[in-house]
Amino acid sequence: SAVISQKPSRDVCQRGTSLTIQCQVDSQVTMMFWYRQQPGQSLTLIATANQGSEATYESGFVIDKFPISRPNLTFSTLTVSNMSPEDSSIYLCSVEDPGTGGYEQYFGPGTRLTVT
Amino acid sequence: AQSVTQLGSHVSVSEGALVLLRCNYSSSVPPYLFWYVQYPNQGLQLLLKYTTGATLVKGINGFEAEFKKSETSFHLTKPSAHMSDAAEYFCAVSGSDYKLSFGAGTTVTVRA
Image (tube, rainbow over all chains, first blue to last red; front, side, top):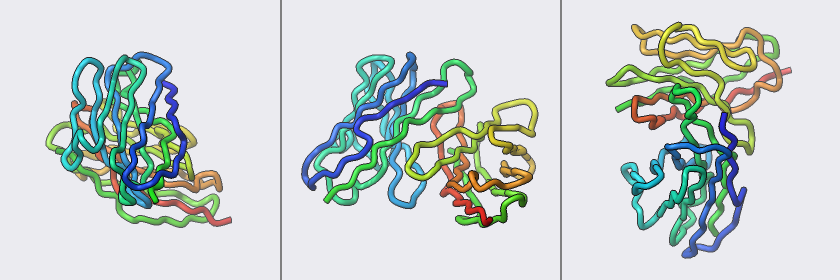
């Protein structure tokens, strides 16, 4: 399975600022996903990021708030813009495992964001 | 569209007892079903999956799950709980678009 790393692992940010989260995979993957896990909650898909195309956002998430880049097949970034305390969450990236064709996703360790 | 319902937000079991976590799904297409585990302050780890074929699937750490189409269920079991099984467990479903929809999660505590 793919090995995924995220930076930073955690951060505390002031409201009104922006944070860019990086996701690095040790193999080339077509599909990368970004999820949000609010405190004590389940995971919600923010967007799907495929290399060479614009990210596709789920209902309730917009590009101005969560711009995503996917410059190559092993890397993606998610920016949380103009942050408010409601953005305090764990942000996780995941990839579809190309080796199995079994539709499973593998997750990074997450970025724990606190907005004050 | 797909959705998942996990029955019971908290489950407490004694060490050595059966672990049973319930998951029901709704899907307009043949579903792909998954169980993930999340240990404190960690990311998600895939326990097992069902895509096609055998409806009883075995995963890591002694867990298994059975896909029952007639009941739209995918319950997770482990015959004998270990202290290390204390974690949060998520059932998830996807279709051919790979997008995962997660249940609310079930927190498992194991009593000595």
